[in-house]
Length: 331
Image (cartoon, rainbow, N blue to C red; front, side, top):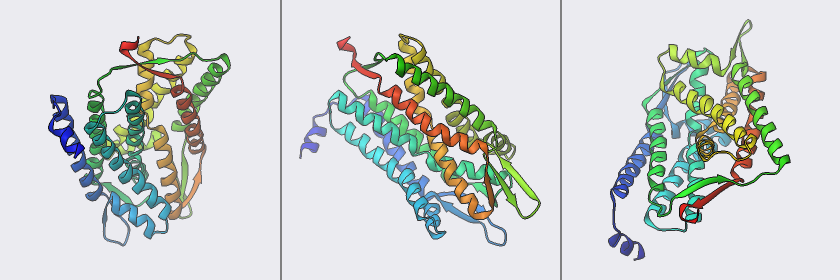
């Protein structure tokens, strides 16, 4: 009854209609992306098998990996659905500014981790093009799913404009030990990050005499040669370029006694859009599954990337705990 009254007397704006349109499109694309064929696995001696994201997750359970099935379904289906439901609730009802900010923060985290399966498939495709696996090709479903995630992110941007009060970002003061700790973590993360993407992640030994190294730098050009463009572009932007900018920006906010507001906003934006931790988890999943098909040896690059993951999470936590969200009217 309250909901019906709320909608009846609400003053709808262009922003409301734009959000509703994009929200509906995101819901439709998410359903299609989860159910349409996402990749085809061409195994020797078997007919090619096209699998959707959901069917691929179920197949992991059939192959003896129910844990991976739960992870994929949780990140690829449950998280995006929960984000869309939460956005609809935020749009329908009004909350206090602090509550809206906390909810939006969790929505951004859910949106980021929803990309896990995209990176799993991207890494698998890269391994197949390096002939480490049987031939795997991309189908339309993975692009539709990725588009659904990005459109839901766009919907969250429009939803922010619904808030009555504008918010500015600032950083609270920081003690000298914490400043030094943050700088050390940032610099160390940057060094490990660069080294990890350059070095081989793991080495595959097939049969008796042949082996092959897999690294992020060698996989991306090889995928481009095979005319696979969108997935390597996404990996380049969200796993290499944005994390690089993030490490630098967060470190600068500790090195500068009073960081300018523009730098703070840039650091906050990079922190929100960087998906390095998501890629690291996807790499673990793919590496474990590769070990089911062939003899796999983890190389230095893999361990460096895994080492960056907790450092990156700690770096982001230290940054976010210093963030202050204030109303413009209060300044």
